Image (cartoon, rainbow, N blue to C red; front, side, top):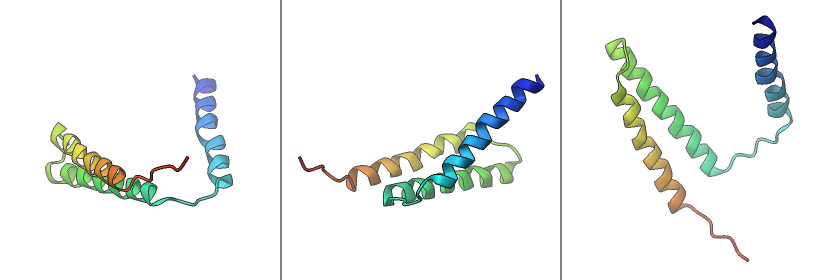
Length: 83
C-alpha cells in the first residue's frame, strides 16, 4: 500500500508542478471567466454548508446555473475562425 500511495503522490505532484512551472501563463478571457464562475460556485456551496452544517443536493444542483452562465458567455463571445 505504501508503494502505491507513494507512486500516486509522485504522479500527482511532481509532474504537475513541473508542468505548472514551465507553462506560460497567458490566460484568455474565457479562462478567466471559467475561473471566476468556478470560484463563485464553490463559495456558494461553502456558504450553504456553513449555514446548515451539512450540504444537501440543492447547492450542487444550483451550480448548474453557474454552468449555464458560462455556456452563455462562451457562445456570445465565440470567435469565428477565418479560413
